[in-house]
Image (cartoon, rainbow, N blue to C red; front, side, top):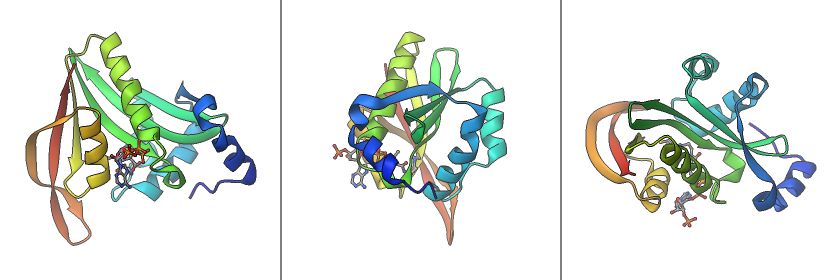
Length: 163
Ligand SMILES: CC(C)(COP(=O)(O)OP(=O)(O)OC[C@H]1O[C@@H](n2cnc3c(N)ncnc32)[C@H](O)[C@@H]1OP(=O)(O)O)[C@@H](O)C(=O)NCCC(=O)NCCS
């Protein structure tokens, strides 16, 4: 788990002014894999992240100085975009970083003249669904039993935002 040092806690007090998006660097991956493992039921592996870089996906890291507060990955094809991963460091949930990342992605989509932004989310992931609804996404479909859980399967909710 990414433990926050005293210095990091102080940095976060000024988070609104000092948080910036950066393109991912290879040196970020170790910390990202650790954040991912803390935050997901089925976390991406190091290889998944490296493959995403090789595929040329948009891979943005939200940093406060050198502290990684979150990251998102999106793929673009013709005039559509799919959000593949969005994660905020576990210590830093519910401080607006998720909203900041979705807003950033929407800006990127508009710059690239994307018509629709899609994502999939576990039915049980109420916090993420609330975030997406708050940013204007609507449910557009369901993949029954798409995700594994500890004791079975659960649906994927497909959500979309028209731009
Ligand atoms: C989903 C996730 C990215 C949200 O990021 P976040 O920085 O915690 O979210 P924000 O602080 O921007 O919250 C945005 C809105 O989402 C909703 N929300 C987020 N967390 C919530 C919680 N714990 N309880 C209730 N509502 C919540 C609220 O509507 C909130 O708006 P508000 O604070 O104005 O009420 C984050 O919880 C996360 O990384 N989860 C683990 C990984 C994951 O599930 N990723 C999504 C996979 S599809």
